[in-house]
Image (cartoon, rainbow, N blue to C red):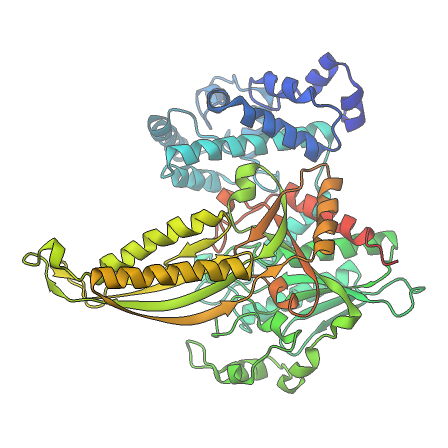
Length: 591
């Protein structure tokens, strides 16, 4: 029997507790406490309340819950004393059918893990799709997490417990994330294409106009056609553009643009950019399935290039749509000496037509983008969705301190002109100053001592600065303070300094009306609205230059890591992203 939310909300305390029995291993108090907050607006709302109850319970309660879980393929499995839920999960992951070598490896990992952390290893073995991780994936994750800090690992255990509860709840309510599963599968399908030198190693790398890149474009186009788009084209910079036309009774309809990029960084993840392509495709598929039309055209653009990995130019795809394609880029060469012009010609792109791609903003309602967060915030808060308030503006510099190289043994500490120490002091100041804002970030990403030696006081030190903030005024105030501190350090330490600005990108605050629409969409799912800025750049910041924009973030797993093979998200979170976008599309008032 499948439960319903209506039945849960109306049931007696005893009946309701029985319905939620077994969600959290040997810990019925969590469900009992959550039920005090009925009625629940949705299963997503219920999941959030359950997680909040455990969070409010404190560290001791969380540790007790972790310790209530059995080891993977441990004594409880051997003695057949697992709970029905745990037995089902470990069986689906194949842990009941393992070789002697696999069993021995898991037992050693269990012993090492318990010795280090004092609690059992917890992993949602049914995985992000709910169908089960492979034994090799489980063992690899087990070994990787052994290197974590104890506090981080405890939090990771709790996050996996919530994922286990989420899957168990879906089983009870027969709440299959059908659209989320389908979109998840599309990402797996697209990830089969990777550039030479990376595909052989099982790594995902798709750079501009390689064979893998062009294969991705064809697959995305085919996915659009299958979903029911009215028009699907490839444009002069390699963007894949799908149009779902407005209802025929709408006179001179405007267009809402959405999308993201399908290129990747080297050895990157499957969801960066691509999630923002597939979520709206799923929305169009559902519109076509039900025969529904919108009072505006929906234009979904799979941008061909955003990362700048093959050529020293970024946002080629979205930049072309705002008229920002620079002719000098065509003479840039990649690592093999191939010019951008030659690469585009070989791909059959009509370079002379690029200027015609510029959109007229008067015909557009705006631009919205769904993107994986690429950070730990939503993951730590156990929230599947976040509404972006602004994309950070940024400044980048390359610099050099020059002091005096001297003998490390004979130069007294108070007579040194140490260039590396000057840079180190500046790096520490970056942490301190950016933290004062709360939402600014500052990074010294590269720090090098040219021709350094173990017994020489560094006479030169080169470094980079990356300064970001959600508003240009805040970014500029941060930069002013950092540059003033740099001068102070140089004078006080007797070194000279040179600094060159290499990048200046304006912040892109979300349009209030479009941000409000995303907030209403999240609220409609029964989720709290969490507002956050984006530290990373996105295609939305380019479209921001000519039309209003706003973004929705989707939680990433593995502490939100991105630009990394561990980048991941759950089918359930993807489902919520699709539902949120459906709500946004269906509640745009054009009157």
